[in-house]
Amino acid sequence: MAPQSAAAGPTCVRFARSGVEHLCAPGETLLDAARNSGLYIPTACQQGICGTCRTVKLSGDVVIDDLGGLSLEEKAAGYVLACCSRPLGTVCLDL
Image (cartoon, rainbow, N blue to C red):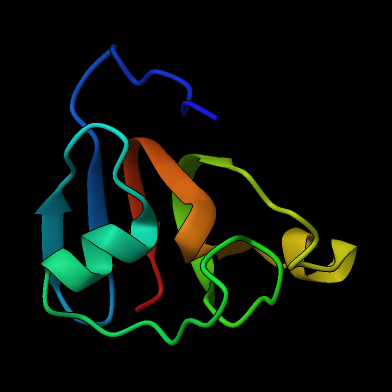
């Protein structure tokens, strides 16, 4: 499935605790952005099922292809799955 377009401008992921900022390539996931920035997010299935890569999104919007890896409570608390979330504009993660 192709991610929704963020053609309005560049996408960027800011990692709040690390102080790192990463300009994303088209279609890059939050997990890819972290890895390409030298940051570690635990992961297992990389398909949005297991929830291992869940991380807190502090701000911004993402397109998420969640296959059940987050509970409603986790979503309400601001969690996203890094493996299957793509930023729309600037996103800040608690990492």
